[in-house]
Amino acid sequence: MLGPVRRVGQSRADPRAPAARLGVMSASPDPLFARLKARLLLALTWLAGRLPRRWLRGAGARIGARSARRNSRDFRITRRNLELTATGTTQGERAALAEAILAHTWATLLETLRVWSRPPTEALQLVGAVHGLEHYRAAREGGRGLMIATPHYGNWELLALYLASLDPLAVLYRPPDSRAGDLYMHRVRSAPGVTPVRADANGVRQLVKRLRGGGVVGILPDQQPKAGEGEFAPFFGQPALTMTLYSKLAARTGAAMLVAFTELQADGRYAVHFQPMPVAVAGDDPAALAALNRTIEAVASRDPSQYQWTYKRFKIRPPGTVPDNPYWPDCYGRASPRSRG
Image (tube, rainbow, N blue to C red; front, side, top):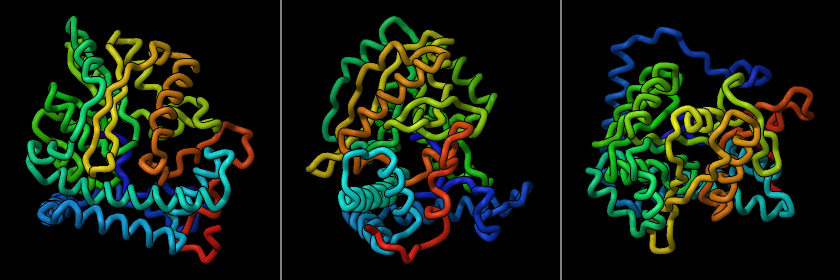
């Protein structure tokens, strides 16, 4: 649904990384070239969407497994995140879980190409069960706006389609650095009933207006914001730079709050879950952010293999923290010859 628009494991360049990996882009790319590139990406997405879902998920799982065997950067980032958060586990257990996470992430990524390129009614056939719909209905009573927090769990793009089948939905997204990528992501996420909103000052004003008008807004609150756009709060025992927008908007607008996510089931279909959000999440203080992160932890802990641990969630640390970047240098560069452990 929302969240950082990046390929698996991609992050903004670290100033200490080799210059060849900085990926500096032109500030003013040619608009015609950007449109053509976006159209090419859309065409490739359409073609991939013609393939059977089992082929896409199978291919994604094999890519993830190969990535783990090659000790890729994605695998090393995932393993480092588990070292930081999965206390009480062995090195072998963390390596096995990291491989399962990569397999799920890649399978879901390729599956999402089909979700984006098929009619919503067809994509929604992947939803096999819905739990807690009464919480959604109760939140919609009285005409209040509704803020839905969606962790990076399961398939959040499918969730956006399901939410839009209930009410028109505005989804906040952080545009990628490239103009072509932005055009592409805006197009594939502009499904019937879904309005993508850029994560900038104008976008926030749109969200406030929609919430005060009784509308529904979706936000992925567990992405790491830019430096200066969040505050530190505990997340799985680690200080994590946490988005303040969700909590501040809830306090400012008086909107109702819910947690929603999809979870892949044994039969290959997804269950949609709605859960109440603790009242303490609405506010402009550290306690609100801590409550928000505890809620996300509870979802991510249901099945850790379905949570997106493939990016550097703890890269920005509080001043004076040692190490200041726990991913440096092992999680930079391409495949490493080091043992998977």
